[in-house]
Image (cartoon, rainbow, N blue to C red; front, side):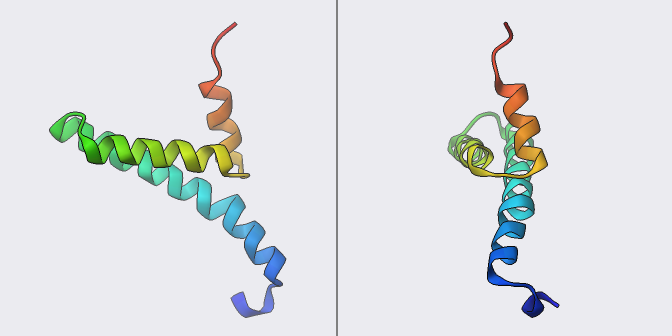
Length: 73
């Protein structure tokens, strides 16, 4: 079925679904590592990757995370 989708639609699906989901998974993995071993290089790197993907993602998870990251007024 993947072959029947246009190249542009496949790219949109990756940006809208896979990138935010990957960022969310990286954040959860970083949190689990920090719970077990404390902050370390791996958890900091995963948090940085999560932030990078969140800023560039275009899906619903990215928009929700951006709203939570804004400072309160």
